[in-house]
Structures are given as C-alpha cells and as structure tokens.
Length: 241
Image (tube, rainbow, N blue to C red; front, side):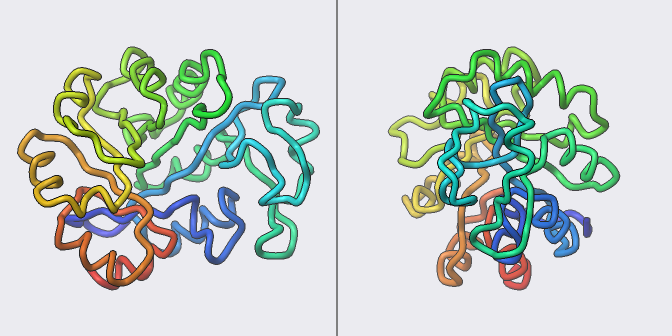
C-alpha cells in the first residue's frame, strides 16, 4: 500500500468491474491497483462455514436458485459465480481472503449480511476467525443491522465497528455514541447533506462512504473529505485524488 492518503480508497467487493465480485481474483486485482483497503460480504453456510458472497441467493452471480444459508459448503464451493464476467470463478471462504491479505498492509471491511436472514452468533463466528489472523487490527466490521453492530462492539474493539446507512439519520452523532461506535458507513448521497461530513469529523466519527462510481460524484465526495471512499472503480478514484 502506498503512503498514507488523506482519503483512503477501498475497492467494493474487490475490483468487480474486471473480475467476478467477491472472488480471489477480484481481491488480487484490488491489491495490484494499489488500494488502501477492500470491502467484502460474509454469510454463513448451512454447515457453519463463513462464505464471502453478497446475495443471499446465488441467482444473480451464478444463475442458480441456491440459498447460501440452506446449503452446505460442499455444495457451494463448486458453484461458478462468474456469470457476469464469463469464465469460471468460485466464491472463497473468509479464511482464504484473510490468508491472502495478511502479508499486505491493506485494511479489510467485512460486512455481515444479516439483514434478510438471521444468522445466530454470526458476529462471534466472524470475530473468532479474524482474531486468529495477523490482521485483526486492520479490520472494520459493518452491518445494516443495528443489533448486530451492537453485538460486535461487545466482542471486539468498538473502534473497529460501523453502522451501514442507506438513508440519512436525523441524529447520527447520538446514535453512534449510544452504540459505542467510532465509525459510520453512509451511502454517498447522504454526504451531500450540507455539513454532514464536517459534523461527523467534529465528533471524531470516521466516515466510510459507498459506493462512489461516477466521476462527478467522486469529485464531490473528495471535496466532502470523508475518511474512506469505497468504489467499484478504485483506480479512477485514485487518479482523482
């Protein structure tokens, strides 16, 4: 990773514009691009494996009507998830991604996908795995599920936990403090609200915004000065900093 930037650039599900999202080739491409971090999604298979994939059902990425939480890893590991790109790519386990990133200096944003299906103790399973890695302090855990984020703060350093926001909160500072968090992951449109980013910065709240892809939006977000910009086009963001 290059020297510290004022705004970090993280790739969204790897470089998903060039390789199938949430696969090892997409993450390797992100490393080669020179990003500061990588965002990925985690769900749990029926037999308890932590699988890196975004959708609860694999129809979009694999063309197969398969639910991750209803399938064993032995069934999932052979599924080709490169329907959008052609070729053959497999979804990895979280432990494989940790092994890939451990030798680097990259940060990792693990989003727990527990907004549709309830995965009991998913938070503990993820923390138990990452605590065995050599990059635990470089990980940010996030979820749209407020209860899940609160559980995470009891299992790991709250400084490494963030609440994902698709819509603006009326009292972001109040909620962040009550959850014991130091970070928010708001959609970039929320940052267009005048004073939003500066309010968070004044209250020592890290702002990790997603998914900023259009050139005009990237330019605007750079002016807003969040701590992190997550994008499907990390090379473009890097070129504009």
